[in-house]
Length: 322
Ligand SMILES: [Fe+2]
Ligand SMILES: [Fe+2]
Ligand SMILES: [Fe+2]
Ligand SMILES: [Fe+2]
Image 1 (spheres, helix red, strand yellow):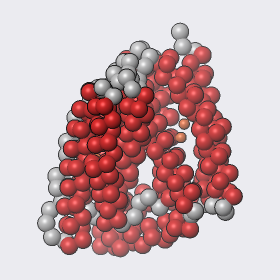
Image 2 (cartoon, protein in one colour):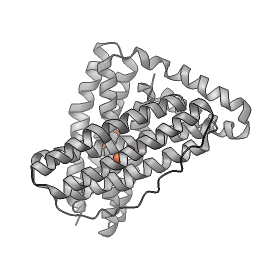
Image 3 (cartoon, protein in one colour):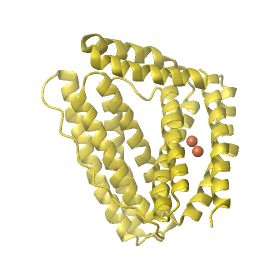
């Protein structure tokens, strides 16, 4: 599938959203069928290509969240043009790169399938990932990080429970979808890392990639639920997405010292984009082409080209900084 046909598919899905609001009875059946048809090709992808698409989505979700924070920092430094560059680039990472990878990977299914996926992710984060990260941080003397990881582990348990209840409502038609959690906005200003151990820093990076991915996935699941005539479920996904981004990602970003001065942020972004453009995505494209996953190979190549443009734009902004 070419990049243009993927875009057409996404536009088509949006059109279906609008149509479903107008003609509820028809829309309840049509979008689900369309989804099955549109995403059935994903099952033929090799496991390696699927894994690379997931890595791509995590990187893109991380870039989206980071660039929005970098944009706010540029505004605070009186650099609104740089702020705008970060925000428009963030939109490309989410609305094009991440969404196209999600389409290719068949990441969005029925409401029930999306809830099961969300429950699996939250269960892993609650029971395994954040508890393990908290233990490691405690052993390494990073007590603030240990406390945060434990608090987030508890939040993920609540997310899992709400999704489980919602799944019961969706599959049995009985009960009520839980009210969405309310996300507080955690401010992230420029600052140094507040953790010492290399292991805690690596775990924070993994955690932020997971949070960025969870945020983006839940927003896609919310759009599907809305289109499927299930606004209460859409609100639950959106509210949870807000917690992943505005609380979890933001709190982790503060501890990691993710945001620096605008000069530092630009320089870090050039390095990241350059790596994606010349190393990560070309490697994924080669692997996908070798196993005949041609649509994915095209996606990876096109995305590498975009990232080269991002690197150039950030470099130019850096050169123009006073
Ligand atoms: Fe990207
Ligand atoms: Fe969560
Ligand atoms: Fe989270
Ligand atoms: Fe980029």
